[in-house]
Length: 326
Image 1 (cartoon, rainbow, N blue to C red):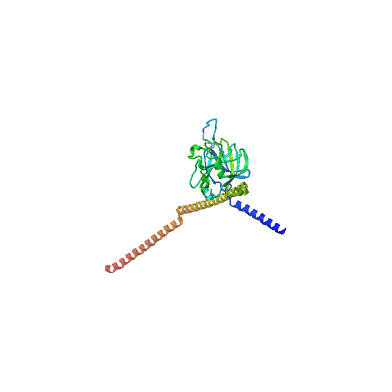
Image 2 (cartoon, one colour):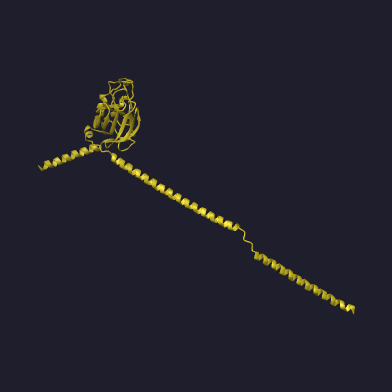
């Protein structure tokens, strides 16, 4: 009994580890991880990464699509976009034979289509695969065997295939260098999606076995709530930086105004000093009177000295004249 319990525990643990390893081996295109997973949209429509029903998904809507009443032979409604840098995902068609996707199909389109580039073949009718999806359905997980679906719907246009009886399985040739999503597909030519058709794709993953694909549980890298939280944090950081910059500019402007005011005050002081220097000192009449009085005094002294000299000269002349008279 004890041995049976131990064996059961070991088996359950092995099964759990096997399931875990299957999930780990998944190669996933997660549209919540990066808003730039997809390249530009071709054909007639619009594409964006949006939040829908608490999911982060790639969203496509057809504009100017196929209208059988207008032109039954039209090839409009072919809406497609490539996955950026798909070679970096490491998908090898000879190994990853199963593809899983979660899709919400808001249209009557019965198919989801891809194109791929293999080592020996680029985008062409021979490298397109059409998968069955449910029209007008909510989010649904689909698991597809790529090889089986390639055989099921190949060739779509026999006129474009040199040997329709010999189906070329380009997917299993090896590494897949490019992947293009052609989204909604009705029929040839071009897919013929209708105006207003919408589709939402949450993820696409690739697996080695069907069991691994069925066991895989998708966990998005970012939920819409996390994205909004990160966006709010980034906005708050930008606003704080802008406020800080505005405060710095305001402080610099105030400092500049203060410097300008100081310069104006200094110029006013210099101008006042210059006016005082240019104003002549008031006349000092007392000094003028003093100068006139001094001049008069020196004239009187000079006259007195001159008079004394004249008297002396006269007296000397008289004293010399007296002996001759005797």
